[in-house]
Length: 263
Image (cartoon, rainbow, N blue to C red):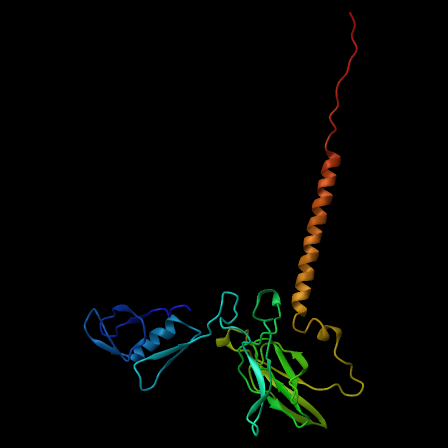
């Protein structure tokens, strides 16, 4: 576990900068022997660590810097699953089912999709038909689960992570599920300003495309990238073999000179 960085705080009285291990309610300046308040330290911490949440702890002499503890690969450091969705029976006070929520497709390099679950931000939507819709995970999918068993029934690709709670509405007799696919800057995902709606195909409309059923599913991008890398490697090897053969053909064959002579 990495140690928290020290914070450089500037004294508002004399301008002296000094390093502090934490944000204190009142800090002593070692240059002019004056004290200054936590607000100055908070402003300095926010300036030194942009993009991270820096907040006061009301009623204490501490501040808070909140961030995810991630490995160099961008994955959480605790053992998986890193995020789950669960159903509870409130009468019997027991968990009915619990399954991982999310994959590592948009976290790991090469879009490798491991079903480990991810940290998630967002709530579910349960319908009268026994289906639970949820985004929330760090990969870019809206998912549908069977409310009775927890089986994943469907997923749809989003332009950014759907870290929001979906909603449902009916228009002209057709039900739609809509979610704000905005991502989450503090979670480290790409951000967007998209709002995406899904619905079952109406009579006469085409079903899901081949791209949507393959490439736009977890692991699809990794397979395509691996196939592309394998094709490039095979082309380089084949090109090297051809070049060596042509070079061997052009290489002159050594000959020995002979002559006749007599006494």
